[in-house]
Length: 168
Image 1 (spheres, one colour):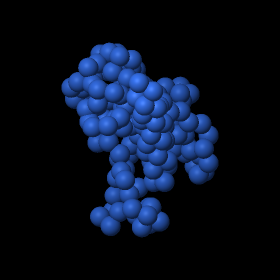
Image 2: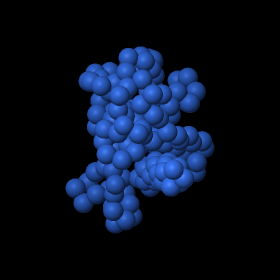
Image 3: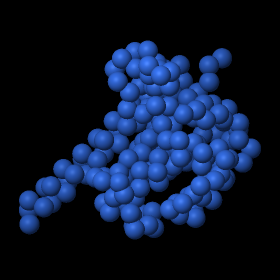
């Protein structure tokens, strides 16, 4: 029986860290088909921080994905963020992460049945065809899917801002 796979990614609007905000996306896949997904934006005001970092949005994407799973979910979690992987598996190194996100991280770790796997982000087409980089690191089209969702949201946000600026 194949396991469900959860992929998650996050990014910033503009430079990292961003005063504007960030984007996140996750997708649950089973037998190479999307079961469910979610994506969105996060402003500094929403997060209760001065600036949004890439590490914060990466963590948020993973948390939202894991929180959407049933209790005792036994799937595979994939992320291209080593920092997020460490936070979600060991519960350490939460510099610049709001307390409420640390608490959510600890909660999803309780009774953990899922396994977390590190991917290489931003793979080439050749890497995707092979499923690995030349150095052997895993890559996935679903991680690329999440990254593209984040980029689409960032473009939409920038288009709205550009239109708003042109009306002034």
